[in-house]
Each structure stands twice: as structure tokens, then as C-alpha cells.
Length: 399
Image 1 (cartoon, rainbow, N blue to C red):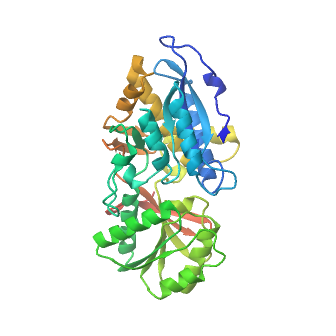
Image 2 (image 1 turned 120 degrees about the vertical axis):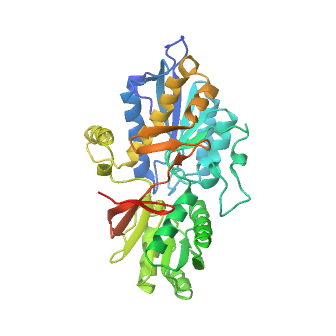
Image 3 (image 1 turned 60 degrees about the horizontal axis):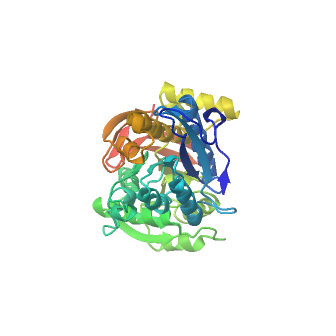
């Protein structure tokens, strides 16, 4: 399913520019239904704003944006068949020069092999699946090679690999005084993979993992999950699933059964949110509150708020920078901006970049460094930033 998304300012169809070539097309694949839809709307708004700020041009050519929905009707997250169709549509379009996606953890595992086979640059605003770029310490037999049939990287992302988020959560729990962990995952790919990585991180930190329990999405009752934790008590509980009503119900049951155990959660809780009354959930996210970013970033947020008539979440900055990374690669490619290989080479060139989301090094693997996560304390629906953390502990205090 697609969403109409050709910007009027960028023209439509085949227009001439530069050396008389057709306009270039950037595709974006985001879940417009389900738990991550709010973040997807913000990311899409940021992409559109970045292209508008560039005047709809890069590399001496006109550029258009085509938005594709990566979810299916009634689904609560991305749909594998839809993601595959989106990637194939982009790969088969001779005007396509880049693909921005995916937003959700693991969805890029479907699209990257397709875009890579076509030599098409792919930029993810938020997919932290570790094996897309490096070997997973929790699954050392699985590496990135399987995603790149061309044997050349074409993928870059703007968030750290999730094994680093797992290490950050474990380090935070240890700093809070926990000597043992229980891990609760949901039944999605993201929850299971991050649970494995949290277990590997705990072993690295010499913290005992007392149990790993699965809280399946959509259960009517989570008392069985709570009983499993009571039978194997730990000083802290790490939840690695997505947010939403199921996460709220599971964490509420866990808190009632283990009121003294600290609750930690991954960035997946941002999708759909979480509201555990009377209990603090300590969660990580690469996204900081809008007011923690630079004046240029706040300017973008203000423009989007004025345009949409409502506040926009800071995920918009990740969409803005994903688009800007593509546009900068087109500019750097110059007369070769219609050549996919030239654009990939410019986008994946190791360098230090100053982005609206911070100053980072882009590595040869397609990752950003250093790994930084906002550390939030959430009680009920309200979250407060308590600082910025990394795999080795606290990096800086919040202002």
C-alpha cells in the first residue's frame, strides 16, 4: 500500500535538469499504521522538510520523494511482504537513487538485500538490527554478509546497533545496584534479538541472568509472566519488547509481583508508549526531547509545528537527516549524481559529520559513533530525561 507523496515543489514525472536527465526519485518506506505510526509520521515530515529546504534539488537535478507504507491494514507493526514489495518497487525504478527505510527494528533485513542487489543506497533513520552492519555478540554465527549479495555495503543508519543499546541497559542496571537480571521479551523478532543481546551483555558484565520469559503480544493476562519472574527473582527486570497496551499490561503485572525490582526498557517502548501507574520504568532511546537539540534543530521543529498545526516529536530530526544525508551524497557525486554507485560511495565515505541530532563519525560499516542514548525515567505516561548514557555508563548529565 502506498501513500501519495510527490512534493509539488519538486515536480512530478520526468523533468529535465543538469545534463538533461530525468528527475531522480528517493523512496521512503515507513509504517503508517500500528504502534510506530506516530514516529513514522514525524520521520516523514522531517524528510519532506529537508527536501523542501534544499529547494527540491541536489546534484544539479530535481529530486522527488515517493512515500510508501510498510505496514498492512490492521497490523501493529511492519509487514514483511509489504516491505519486500516496497524495496522491489524502488529497485526496479530507473529514476530511483536512494531508499530511506526502514523505521522498525529488523525490517531492513527484508529490504537491504533487494536494494543492495540493485546497487541502491539505503538509509535507515532508526533500524538498529545489529547484524545489518556487524556481527551480533549474542548470535556470533550470523553476520552482515547475507544482506549484501553484491559484496559491497550500500546501507547506512542513524542509530547505534542494538547490541550497544543492550550493553547500555545492562550497564545502567548495574550502576543502579542490581547484581542480577531477569529478561522479559515479547514474541517479535526485535524483542527476541534484543533479549539475546541483553543476555550476552550481562555475561560480559558478569551479571547473572536468572530467567528469560516471553510476554506474548496480545495476551489477555500476564500473571504467568509475573509468576515466572517470582520463581527466579532478580534485582532488575529488562523488557525488550515494543510498547503499547501489551507492554503496559505485562509491566504492570511484573511490578505488582516484584515491587522492589527496578524496571528497565528498550527504545521499543517508544512505539505505542507505556503507562505503568505507580512504577518507574527506566528506558533508553536514541531520540532526545526536542529542546535538547541545537538551535538549527529547533528551527526545523518549529517549521514543522507551524506547518502541521501541532507539536512534532523529535523523530522528525532523524527523517530530516536521513534525507539530508542522501542529498549531500548527490551533491558530492556532482555530474555522477544519477549513478547509484557514485552516490553510495559518497554516502558511505567515513567522515565526521555535524548533524541536527549531534556530531558523529560515520564508520566503514555504515554505523554512527559514538553510541548515545537518552536515559528516561517514566512514571505513568510522563517521561523525564535523566541524562545521556552509552555502553560504558553515563556520558553526560541532562541540562
